[in-house]
Length: 554
Image 1 (cartoon, rainbow, N blue to C red):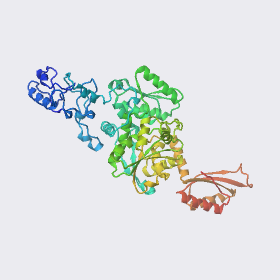
Image 2: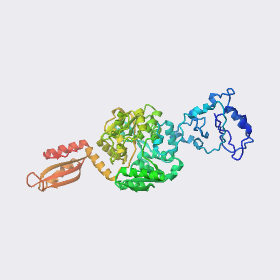
Image 3: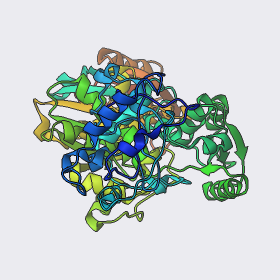
Image 4: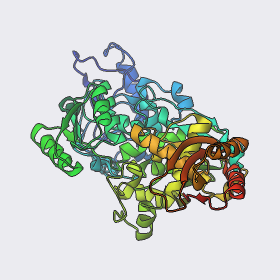
């Protein structure tokens, strides 16, 4: 094992003849690491002493096996000099609470100067065989070139690298716990700067790009949370970023991307037109075209959510994530949680309208037959299943995938707004919707964490969602009845509503298009009640006074 106290050779000094005293079975490359400058001529005996300890001979032609660095510890590639850093020492797993134990020296990028030497011997194939097991570096031009299953070490490294660029969001006990009979903790990822958990994967992805590619820039072509995260973090890293949007994109999304610092270009009438244009610009100008895929780098960044939740909430029994076609958050976090505690249940939730993940798991390959890319309400939950890595991790590590109705998602959004003062979209509320719908009765009395991953709900949708949710929750109801068009009859109706403590939201009178008796009026009234029981009491009171009252079904 290379000793980290070996001194560096000054660049202006030529190495003396001590090299000839090294054993003949020396590996192909030798590296002397440095913690500071020194005098070569004064340290020859020390260097020779360490070298002799390092390269012990079993005989004249063989090396002791324990003197060869382990394959997993070698930080080099074939025909490339051995770099400084973690030679002979595997880096410990990183979690957010232990980041202070790591220094810059553990992640050096080959800045230490080295002397290289090649000695031909019969044992050179030992090192060559070891290096053949190490993946060779390649210049990455897209996310797909990093497709491999992630390890816990990848997620730990991502947590260390992005800790200063994203929020460590709270995972707090919720008042909804009493309502559903379990200890519920909400991981509030919608508090990220762009309102989405996608920031984690995007930041780690951008930081992992080669410097040359960072100088040229990146380009995206969608109005999703992924694109907004790219726009913001690329600008923060001073990476040129271009966002191509179709002319049908909501003006609020266009404005946000510009505010984050991206160059926004409107092109085409559909998302496909903007994607084709973005790819052409990337090819002509050397930009890197980014789209949400399941590369190891991106999944590792998303997986830091699971690592943080494990640190924040002790003794977790289950964790619920949004699923759907874009299941990178589910897959990456499952890899972290199952490594830390295999007994934690990891559950994914998707919509019954677009059961993309369930269909893909059943088929054994990504399936986009159920996908609906342009559904503004569901967002990324309704997207296509974008890769086999996420699907393979999900099938291996996720315990259960359930589907919920659109009505359950709307009520979940309403519960979060009332109990947590959180305005979230369908993707953020779909995890809690599984508890609202009673899909997970086995979690009663247990400690459960739910990821609220996104809060980017457009304003015109917010009003519609809340109004519809109040109706589904039996708290806004409408009825119609016929009364005589005489003074005092309307006041009697209002007296009944006041006695039953119903709040009148809207009331209309129809006199012209009435098929009943003459001198009657049809009254259509919309009222707000407390809950389902209160609605039933109001209905019974009205039927006693007006037997022909008709209740509008939701």
